[in-house]
Amino acid sequence: MGAGPGDPNLLTLRAAELLAKADAVVLDAETQTPLLRHCREGVEVAQAAEGDLVRRAARGQLVVRLVEGDPMLFSSITEEAAACTAAEVDFEIVPGVPPATAVLTYAGIPPATAVPEFRVVDAAQEQDWAAHAACRGTLVIYNGIGDAVAIGKALIAGGKPDTTPVAVSSGGTTTEQYTVVSSLGRFQADLKHAGFTEPALIVVGEAVGQRDKLSWFETKPLFGWRVLVPRTKEQSRSLSEQLIAYGAVPEEVPTISVEPPRTPQQMDRAIKGLVTGRYEWVAFTSANAVKAVREKFEEYGLDARAFAGLKVAAVGDATSRALIEFGVKPDLLPSGEQSSEGLVAEWPPYDSMLDPINRVLLPRADISTDTLVAGLTELGWECDDVTAYRTVRAAPPPAPIREAIKGGGFDAVLFTSSSTVRNLVGIAGKPHNVTVIAVIGPQTAKTAEEFGLRVDVMADKPSASALAAAVAEFGAKQRQAALAAGDTPRRPSQNRRGARRRAR
Image (cartoon, rainbow, N blue to C red):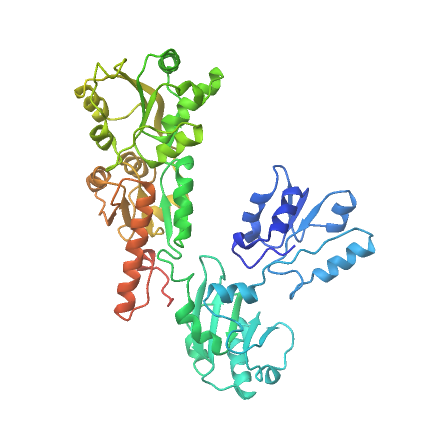
């Protein structure tokens, strides 16, 4: 089965289907581990050196052998297929997306647009470079980095003009992708300090000249940025997905652990009151509060129908989504600032003629502020402020993460609340001064500054999505400023002392 060129999202549907059924998976390389997310729990995993395919299949197992790129292109899979045939073991070959096309696409190089000729060669096998010099279209060379200079000279000797454009791309289709554009005549000088290693592709031909117009992957606003997301894992998933879309490499480091309240009786009474008509409103200030109530409902055999006749308020979009997933559509959402203050600004005052009950249930964290309670009380409502869950500081992250935080290994850190600032500094130390500090709002900015952090980015509205967008805009502006000044765009972590310097 072809594992594709590197990006795990380029796996074919047939490959994902078979991985889900596999009894055993044999990997070509450690980099293929992310593909195991398609497998069922308990699947047997082995490296290619350990994986006797025939023996496993003969035992009746469904074995998936992952091969880099496409298994029928520069692969030794034919020997393994022959061994299956000899042992009368049935096999299927599933094609994969080959680097020859995928890496070029991710580098913005159309392989066969101007001239309808596309030639792929393996430099590991003896080649007649004079014959390949006659290729009028695009020449793609596998396994050629070690002999790149000699190959360039051989192509010129074979009649290829020394002005012919050349690109070298390594880490293709991943956020480690790194491309250098040159020409056959300048090849040696431009590659001297690039530090390329395999796997990499050499691309020769006029199509390389289209890269300036078609480069879309390496020009993403946060391309290659290593971004720290200090949140609970449940909350960070959608934020991480958004960061990945901007080209970043998010790293989720839990700083807050959500735990049940020490005394559950208060929540038990609140759920009973909710069902028996004690409340007119229920106000949710976080997705965690929704989760806590939902779990209590399930404990009592209840579902969203218990909210019938109640008005429901949500502090923001994330909380609203959690309610909708539960089957409850909020009646009230702030139209402006998504905060307790914004919710109070929208909340109707108590009117004894319109409201038969004047009581509001607030299932919240144990460390919540009194802003919402004070605002609703002033509007004439009575509030049952109930501890639905506790937030406690998480355990410190592994030593390499702590060292990266303090040593400038992260390009940005996204703080989504004051508690994430306090807890991250408490469990891992202060981020390095080259790291971009991004905060969700003014209160979080104030806390960050109290800890001696320089705030670089603040979201225009207090939501995780807006925060990610603000960081992407910051990264895009930094990139544009570098290009306008004639400089090579650099990630923040590359500006720390001792960071490896290489042109992008």
